Image (tube, rainbow, N blue to C red):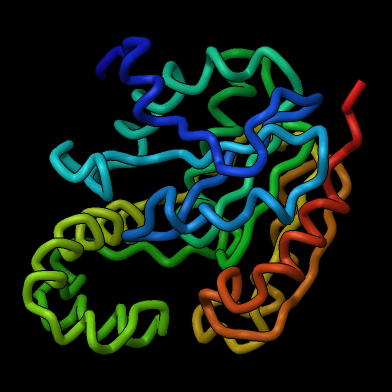
Length: 257
């Protein structure tokens, strides 16, 4: 376990342009496997006034490319909790897509258990509810370069010309491999339910996450759950960004005083 210094805290939490003014609510966004804070760089103008928005930058990507990626969720949480705590002194909400949904959900559980803190709303996207997560042993998982490139191609979020570029592939694959290792080896452990409101979003053409998988998030909280299905595949958060941001904005409480 590593402690997070103030400098480390700054490296984890990045303001999203367009929503950097302090407000009544802080929103923290967690990207999908292989993604970084740039996933959310266009989000600021689509969020309501009174929301101060941040993206969480995990090690091993973008400007943290020299930091060792973390392949174990518990180790990630050991670093993430102390990095985020200084920012949780006012009402907050989480949004996570795919792997980011699992990270934000387990982070919420940890904060509730260890700190007595809970977001006003947890928003999970493009991800099966954890009790339906399929885990694999790393020996079963094909993490070869060719298999990872094919997976990126299947997700349809990376231009083909980049996937044909050896320099780009060698740059992105170590992070994607580490993230898939973390995601695949994750094992759901039943525990205390959350109390916060949950919004669960899915894509109607996502080959891995069905509407029933999305609806099952309601089983994990005593609070209200809202489910919305968007057009698109696994990375619908990019193709349906404006509509998703509208739904996120409606889900966030108005705490600007």
